[in-house]
Image 1 (cartoon, rainbow, N blue to C red):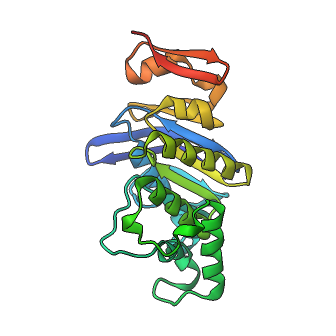
Image 2: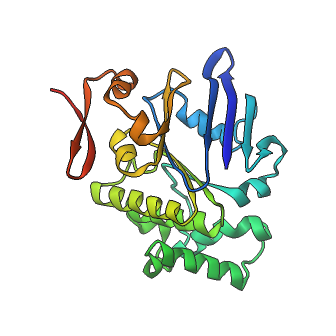
Image 3: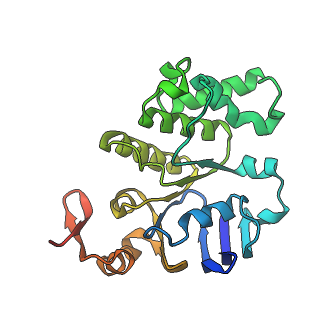
Length: 253
């Protein structure tokens, strides 16, 4: 579904990404791992078309994103940020409806079909009862579920998320990741950056490990995500142990 080939990007003389190459297939759950400052957010901004001055090639469904309009980009990929505060107290339903604006224009009144899409998306993530609540009055976990519903109403098959669980408590984090994994089984593709390798071990089908702006490892999670890799990425005495509940990442003390 998406291919990144020889991607490099610099802010002035400061090189951020260097020859990054990987691909993601439809239905994959790709976890992007790496310490702060390795270029994960920059990579996301390049894929989303926010940053233009890169070298290399990024294609979505075989098309160079440089040749795609904003509306075409919105039709195939959606972005769920880590923080999504708003100065306006929109209702949950109105917030989700914003995901459909690429179909009719930002300032057009939503049609009945758009409202139906938004309500169906709220049902799909289990928060239909919040439709009339103000977005700003929700908990962090509820807000993230609203943002997923908005992405689903956008009807984009690729969901991109830059550390979306950073501010969630344990329960909401696990519910959020479980929902994402279920969505990949329905045909959605998820690319998610995280600081927690356990998220990758428990939920992702593949891993992209970044180190100093380059790809350190990429492939099937079970094959790629090793203790040696974690030690190199984070500089800690990491171990991965087998348990009755799957593989667990830990640190030797």
